Image 1: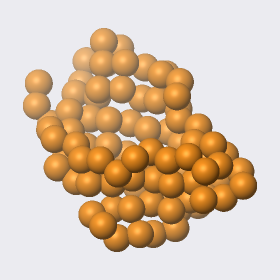
Image 2: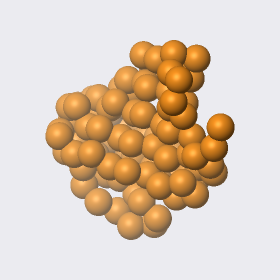
Image 3: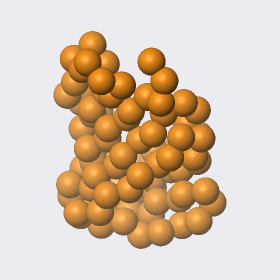
Image 4: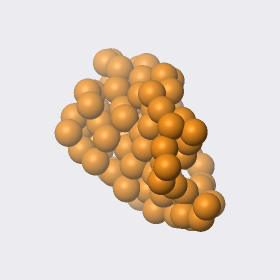
Length: 93
């Protein structure tokens, strides 16, 4: 994970903008967010995204919105890295 910008860099409710590389056989574990929304933008690679218990294949160019209170995770079941841009926005501040 590479933090591009953190909350202090913004005047808005953006919490962070990170570049995340998920190696083959790894995952961003299934988890839930509280008071923020999160966007995954797949820059390269493909994997299996679980959103609210439903599995979908994601590929380069896909953009996924993880809503406030939503549960999600991403598994890299391929032989190549998944390269993501992850942007999180707080609902309150």
